[in-house]
Each structure stands twice: as structure tokens, then as C-alpha cells.
Image 1 (cartoon, helix red, strand yellow):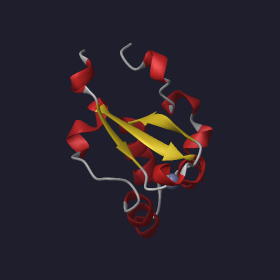
Image 2 (cartoon, protein in one colour; image 1 turned 90 degrees about the vertical axis):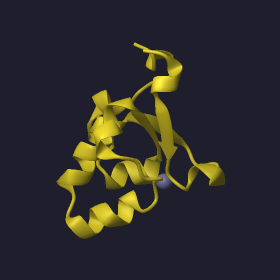
Image 3 (cartoon, helix red, strand yellow; image 1 turned 90 degrees about the horizontal axis):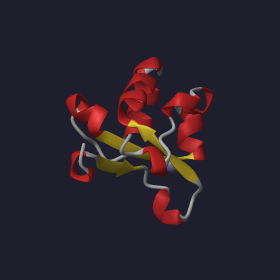
Image 4 (spheres, protein in one colour; image 1 turned 180 degrees about the vertical axis):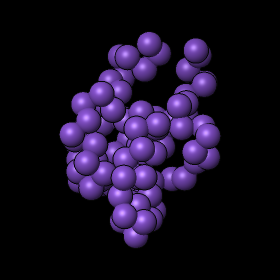
Length: 87
Ligand SMILES: [Zn+2]
């Protein structure tokens, strides 16, 4: 798995200096699907879009607020540490 295989997306709060983490794209999609449709649309509107089929190869950076909206804070496995990106 080369570095180029991974693509990164991020929520629009990263530019504002918010704290956050990288999350596995597949978990991000799962989390979106758990939300009501209107919530999912709202959250996904803050993150640059990608094809869902590519999710396993996508790292999504989310600030703590966006992660909380997706309830990804309850899913520690979803967090992808930089040092484990190529694992
Ligand atoms: Zn955010």
C-alpha cells in the first residue's frame, strides 16, 4: 500500500486551526449512514466529497465538533493515527 493510495479529505474547520484527528473513510461513511438524512447532509456538506466506493482508501480529517456530530468519538477504532496510516 503506497502513500499515493490514500487520499485525504478534511472538514472545513481545519483551516481555522481546530483540533481533530484522521478517521478511516469507511467509518466516516458508516457514521453518516447512522444519522438522519438531514443531519448527514449537513455534516457531509462540511467535508470535501469523494466516491463512497473509495472510502477504504480515504482518510477523513474531522475536528472534534464534526466527529461528535458523527458520534465517531464513540468509535475509537475509527481513529487513524498518522503513524499507522500505512499499516
Ligand atoms: Zn469540523
